[in-house]
Length: 392
Ligand SMILES: Nc1ncnc2c1ncn2[C@@H]1O[C@H](COP(=O)(O)OP(=O)(O)OP(=O)(O)O)[C@@H](O)[C@H]1O
Ligand code: SF4
Ligand SMILES: [Mg+2]
Image (cartoon, rainbow, N blue to C red; front, side, top):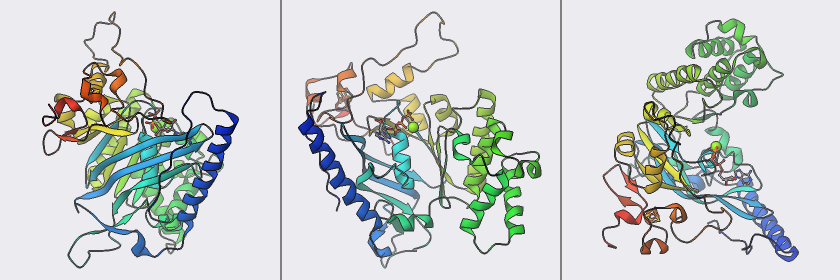
């Protein structure tokens, strides 16, 4: 199994010796993980079983790091959560808490060689493998899957919609060319005419009123909302089981944002897929999500149904997030609440609760080891000593 190594840099400034040691360590680590990704392995080496066949993805103890010149950045620090079938799972948390890196880890799209998944598993519930001899649903472990085999699921079973569609679409090819290309990858035996027909159907499905014209247009000829619809059409081309939408509406104005979210929700219902929806916007989560994952400094600090997280938030960070949400009846002269303090340095994470330096409920035992996940209900879990009845 993968070995995790930490660099020795501690202070704010690095000596030349420390800097050289980090670079040497980084090169060794990057070579090690890159070699693993290129290894010639058998399917059985990355086959595992789902813990619950009703989940489409199960993430367990995921660690993703970046080997930088300043040291190892611990972007995702032991994240575990499930994405159930036919559900929208919202992921919230402040900037830099590891939302995008978690989603890129699922797609094996973390910027390599510096970015590497060094520990954990991502079980993907595939129909390719069936069940084992005891009837358990077999799954791919994406963490162990070599890069060359990822094409089996990436872009087909799991697709992604990014924040800024202009950077995802190639400006020198028409929309039709790019849509057809996606289809050709999934269905290489399909005729050119059938692929075009399918691409036009996809454009109609995402609500584009002049699909033929859009098919022949270049990305710069479309509005932001239309480009995002095209991205959704591309994501739908292979009938995905999971769509990862990373801030899909942040670059759009509010009316278009509502249309795109409605479209995503109706498509999710129609094709029966799951959505992992990453957003800063708690309003979007309340509207769209069935379950919510709250992340802080590369960890999941609270998770539950949308009702539990909004009506009964437990972690002081989740409570702070709710308080910092602007409300329509808020006094405009009153400053908006913001959580004081800063996120710990991801290169030197503390051994105790990562929220401790910002927490107004901090107690003596919060200086102990990182709090374990505590069950509030069958669906609601929180990592905070406030709810640790045994330790009281
Ligand atoms: N290519 C990279 N090299 C070094 N560090 C990186 C890289 N990409 C991400 N990180 C670090 O990983 C951490 C998590 O980043 P991530 O992009 O997942 O945050 P996020 O929660 O998506 O934030 P935002 O809401 O701003 O999109 C951050 O500390 C970030 O600086
Ligand atoms: S564990 Fe302690 S410091 Fe951390 S959030 Fe809970 S009360 Fe605050
Ligand atoms: Mg992000």
